[in-house]
Length: 382
Image (cartoon, rainbow, N blue to C red; front, side, top):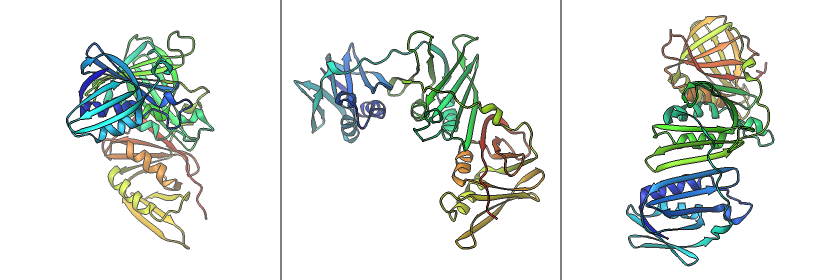
């Protein structure tokens, strides 16, 4: 095998495939990255029996063939090379990487021991890459990190015709995003629970692409059972990834949203974020910030009389009764950081009940309910 490729294209493609390789593989070959040069095309693949990644891109192929090398090592080498064409050649049990006067020799891994990558499930529909990336980012922040509760580490995807709903929760907050897409069939209906980390990394990599194909297979649907796949064209070639779905029943989250609100506060997002960051500086670990609403004002406070204290007020449009409520400051910042609107709206029922954060285009405008972030309050002392 022998081929030539531009350094930037190679480094980007290798980094994308290598990002999903296990750091402590159960068998050595799973740390490998498979390079297959054939018919003027280079295919780079990685697979750990859970998540697969594959990039196809044009290359100058001098000698066709396949080789398996350490993915992370090749990624480090590719990234460090000068911005010149890179020549890669298999030489017996080694691979030689040459770029200008730089030369690296890497040991190969046994190709015949590498597992076959799973096939993509049948395509369910397409969505713009930037829309998918933004929606997943808004939801994935609320996914759990505790592997002892695997169901909560996923993002639930619900497809009904031309509508897609994404939802994630860690029991302390819940994020839900609704978006439109182009289904393969107008009556398509499916649900899946996708690992949040894999989904977030995958969606982020398609930001610059025009269209992303989502291929969803659920148990009993035939090929690719229990898998979800994503494919899209980027500047670095055609990318395709699959991952196994999580098992378990996701919470019935729609019943958690309160049917009515007693108090609504609208606050300009940027000043809200900056004020919250400042006040939270004195909040000790696992202690809440206090939010008091009333008289066209939102007041943030943190700290205790025995330690450092901070308080700051913001202008706000308040509808309904005033109240005082406590929040985990980082959880509130997470929600404010992804609403992507000039104004943040917080809707409350009572101080001991969850609040719902949404975005609005202006201080006197109705909130956009495509994205909702429900946040549990924290009990205040005293």
